[in-house]
Amino acid sequence: MQIKEILTLTPAEQEVTVKGWVRTKRGQAAVTFIAINDGSTINNIQAVVDSDNNQINEETLRSITTGACVAVTGKLIASQGSGQAVEVKAEKIEVYGTADETFPMQPKRHSMEFLREKAHLRFRTNTFGAIFRIRHNLAFAINKYFNDKGFFYLHTPIITASDAEGAGEMFHVTTFDIKNPPKTETGEIDYKEDFFGRETSLTVSGQLEGELGALALSKIYTFGPTFRAENSNTTRHLAEFWMIEPEVAFYELEDNMALAEDFVQYVIKYALENCADDLAFLEKRLLDEEKNKPQNERSEMALLEKLRFVVDNQFERLTYTEAIEILLKSKPHKEKKFQYPVEWGIDLQSEHERYLVEKHFKKPVILTNYPREIKAFYMKQDADGKTVRAMDVLFPGIGEIIGGSQREDDYEKLLTRVKEVGIDPENIWWYLETRKFGSAPHSGFGLGFERLVLFVTGMTNIRDVIPFPRTPKSAEF
Ligand code: ATP
Ligand code: MG
Ligand code: MG
Ligand code: MG
Image (cartoon, rainbow, N blue to C red):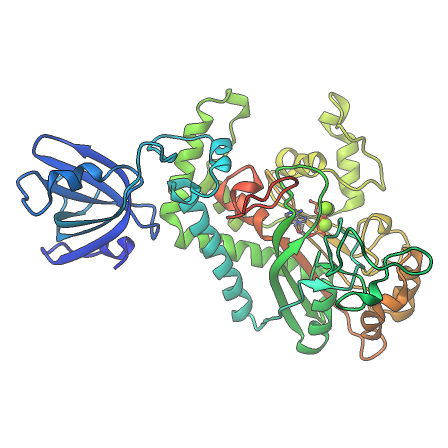
């Protein structure tokens, strides 16, 4: 039985066995208290060992230190102390594995930098236990949401030959000896000789393939690993992240916005309802951290309040052009100026996005109708010829959390745009054909899963919300 379940039992001296890792051991003359955690919950269970228990010898007791793995069998009784309802009166202890004093996760607050260095053991801390349980619950809520709404989970390929997204740098996939690949007569790498007979890479988005599914199954979503060789080291970009991409036939931009809002609110609400203990722990942790900050740098809302606020309030909707006007009139623009100057046509930087969300509207924002030059070729063109039916959802503390659009469904317009941006139509003939045969209005978006987990956990660095972060120059395992 897992500790989470044992903690809910009514104590009646029934025998239980607790298996887990020792968080702390406190000794008094007559009794020893061992706090054990098995990762099923943020809460530890306390095992109490009486010194007159002759089944547990002193040597065993001495070998139990922070980090050791044990199985404790005994009677479940009402706890004598405060803080927990039940505890185990230990009768037998088996030590699976000891941990000496060099075990890095000692019971004290470690810095996130330190924990990143000890990434192989950070799972054993309360903070990372909470983060990864919340991450799991969010993933489950995402699948549940779409399933309940009649969406089908479509598994799009990881290795892809469609290099059309242009969203970031690609990781190439090849079986060639990279030091000595076969070359064509003109000296280029001859991919005809390679495994797939053409150049391939790891997917930067499942959208184009997702559209093929949506134009037959009507409502699909993908949820899979996504790869971008981002050259900048930021707190919001990973080289390998998970993306959720719903794609829906017969949806226009307005439907797409409504879906994005309802979906994000649903999954956050699910976390509030199902991860209360973990969220309360993280909130307290953040509040403790903030005590060391000057008053004006502290956040206005505590974690739970912030999450409830997003769930309960409509997101602000406005066009890119309206946002530019606000940014041009904004205070930081007059006084301090943004680092990146604002003018119509720029791709918004996170400082601009965060100004709109955190200072101006003080709530999540959906920006629409971006200039077509800064957005992908597949977005549906507006009648003005300048903008496209794009939408980005911006969140406090994060900036862009979702990017999406209504897709261009007109064959000729799409083909013209494909050529304009320099894509060889031959390379995406299969995509173009969907607009030739039974084309339909359709829309979709991509949500970066780790950005959502960042928001819900209140963490500030994306490396801390994925179990095995891949970033430039770092991949220990
Ligand atoms: P950004 O402007 O932050 O670089 P993007 O516009 O390049 O993001 P999209 O191509 O719109 O990203 O991808 C959809 C979503 O995927 C983004 O809104 C974001 O939540 C997430 N995302 C994009 N790149 C990364 C990354 N390198 N690491 C983690 N999440 C990412
Ligand atoms: Mg990007
Ligand atoms: Mg962007
Ligand atoms: Mg985007």
